[in-house]
Image 1 (cartoon, rainbow, N blue to C red):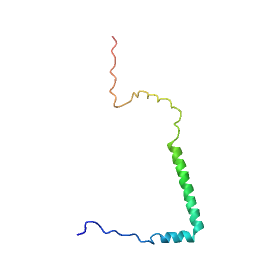
Image 2 (spheres, rainbow, N blue to C red; image 1 turned 30 degrees about the horizontal axis):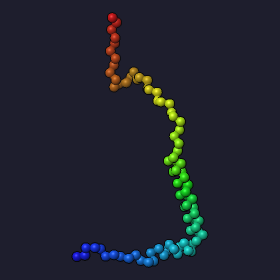
Image 3 (cartoon, one colour; image 1 turned 180 degrees about the vertical axis):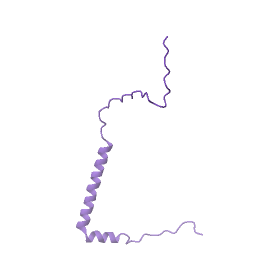
Image 4 (spheres, rainbow, N blue to C red; image 1 turned 90 degrees about the vertical axis):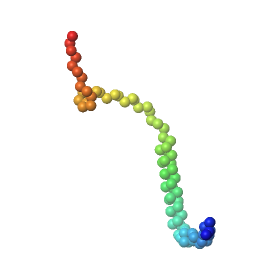
Length: 83
């Protein structure tokens, strides 16, 4: 019984297809990477502006709602006796 798993070494040619693709299509790959970098930069600026936005002017306090005389949960008022 082996207590430690056998160490596997990665193949040295693991990324070779990607390297060949970029070598063969260098202008297209450069354009694609430049476009992605501009998109990520714009996204970072957008998120930074959204996160650090200055709070607006203070809003006036909300006015309390008027009393609803037809509220079914409120008990009815008893009539006052003249006296």
